[in-house]
Image (cartoon, rainbow, N blue to C red):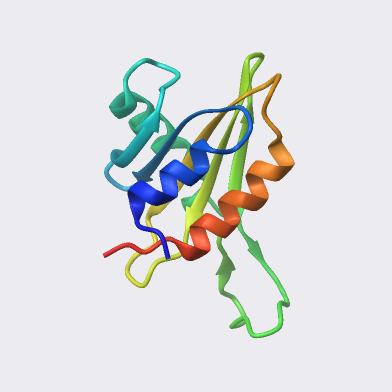
Length: 134
C-alpha cells in the first residue's frame, strides 16, 4: 500500500507522464507533486484543477442517482474521474475514496503523443484504491 510519494512515483512511470499530484479539492492545495506542471507551478495547477474537481463533485449534473446493487436509494454515486483533452496532452483527475471526507484526487498530466489514456485511467484507479493517506 503506497503512500503519497510512492503513488506519485508510480504514476510518473506511466508512458507519457509529464506530471502528477495529489490535490485536496476543498482547499486547492497540492498534498504531493512529482514531475512537471503545465503552468510551471504545481500550486497554481492544483488550485485550477481543484475548481474542476469541485464542480464535478458538487453539481448534480455530474452525478447519477440510480439503481445500483447495494446503493441506498436517493444517494448520489461519486464521479470516478475527469478527463480534459488539450492539443498537447491529457489531464486525468481520479477521485480517491478515503475514510474521512474523500476530498482528494490524483491529477496526472500526460503527453498527447506518447501517453496512453486508457492505461492511465486503469493505473490511476488502481493507485487510488491502494493509496494510504493518514
